[in-house]
Length: 404
Image (cartoon, rainbow, N blue to C red):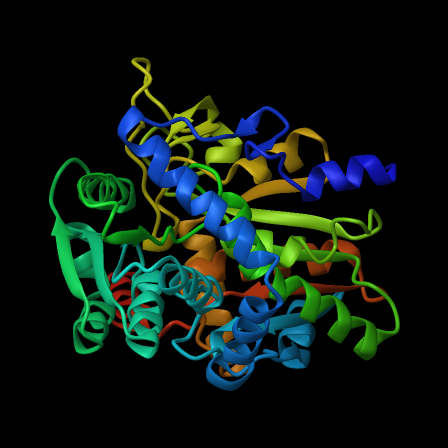
């Protein structure tokens, strides 16, 4: 792979395209608000004072760098390659989401906005954004599908305790896609008041680039930590993919290292029948969703298809455009883990290592265990543990109680 090719994998063009994907496909009334965000971010990322404050907050509020943990017991249990876990679950608020939320709220404050608004699925992004808004003195409004409100009640309570307004969305499938639609509708009417703080590497330019940049701290740290631990780069890195923010953050540290295989693990759901999964890279086709050109799980009329995942943070019918580009150029591999595999990995990691993962992260753990067996004992890999499973324990307990 040439240097120009790796640069193309890493950097979006000015208009925010990764190959044929990305861009800003917007109704006329949102063109200028999104352009304002793009201009503000471009200025902020080149401002040493802004970036210094961001790095300081990561260190002294989030607790970075997060630990790269050699999971010896899991490695012995599985057999094969050494498994390392990048412990984003140890961050303040319990997931990787705080990395970009603090960046977005710092940007909102720089732009003179008084409020931030966003969607959330599992609630991790909502909790992180509410936390960041409280810390930096802004108001926060979170839209969440009614199905996810029920599944993730502890996170709803946390958001409300942090002072956020939580809007339960009942339209359509009442999940993540509808939450995005609802939040965008409010933002479109009040763009002068709000910054839309998108929760993944999705949406119109500049969000796929901006969220990736804020999440790239994961990959930078993991690369340095692994080199210190092993004296070489990992054979593979693995992360779950819904929209794809934690995966893009991890991948970004290794894009220029072709000897490191990149694996994104999608939600295979119940099975791969329509409406039973959210495996966009596996079953999706090119389309438009939420202001971007990407792959979409869609119906014959072009509308997004119903989706399902045991993990509410992954039940999205699209994916970040850079992921599609990485797939089509062959730089990254995209596989899927079904609900049963994710639940099994959740239980295994909990009982073997005493670490309760988020159901989203459990998808990555599931494939990491498969990959460890394939690679053999001379290899080593990194699995991004993108969040902790406190939010999921009641739901998982109910699922386990229903098993024969």
